[in-house]
Image 1 (cartoon, rainbow, N blue to C red):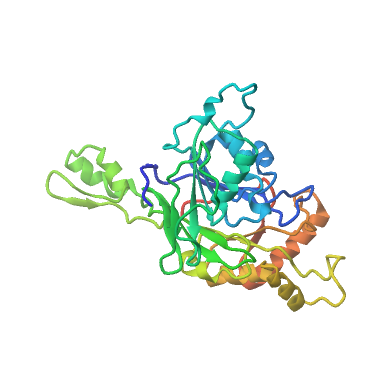
Image 2: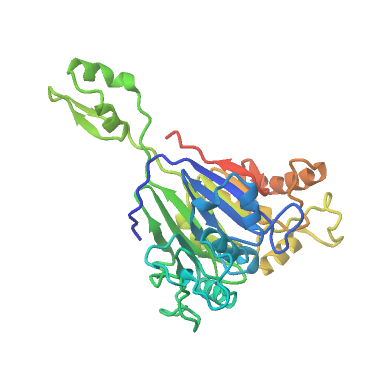
Length: 390
């Protein structure tokens, strides 16, 4: 899908982990959500319970959110969506005594928020808003990523469109097993693929277009001065263009650098379907719900082995740190950040030595498979994704 959005390159790219817990939140972790900042704009990936309060504690500006990508419809990944929409789209309050609420009559052709998710996302949002009698000042739209066996049309609910819902939500079908370019503008694109969990689940790949190369002015200035060419041509050279000078000399801008690639997975015990899209990722964010920590975690059962823990974890649709590290190595990721931890792994390892021991051990298990340093996410952690050198 092409977009009319025009962005300036290179982007300032930063990730803020808003919630890093799995099924149950804890005092140090809330349910899954992360914010991707693309210069001034913000995209969310999942929106579990607690997302809104974490946003208020973070450096992320709620009013900048323009897209929300849902990996799957388990509650720990979607229960925070409706409250967040209500805040962004002015869904508080209502009219009494039969007074007309003007929010029931808005222009739905210019949605402020775009939501992407698997089948059921549209029905969930529509039902929740309908039965809570929630109205908005601005519109939203829901696009669904449909699997081959999903309905080809329809909204998966008998309810009509909400008064703020754009009827232009797309049902996007796979081509060769993936959803390529579900969103694209002049600088950034998003593709997706199904990953195996206990319910239909999606992994997303955010790809930046090639970036201008690093320019060395000293290689160009002598020729520009010799021919009395305006210095403004440096801008074109910086963009990688070729410039013909007054005497016919042609200067070639530096070759473009590869754009950054981010792979953001939902819950999974097998993400192999996204592997072709994910190759050579600059950053992989992969769940690591359970770990075998026999000498660290006193809750470890006496008869547990890594194989037993992995089997139990897989049976619930999740991954261990070793599984995450092995996948990161397989796709040649440059960086791996683990996410979506069991509530028994506290998320205050920056201040609590016991929690730090746990998280260092979990990171170490992944590092043995990955062969590189691994980071364990905590709520409100910020990660900058720098521009590649080449």
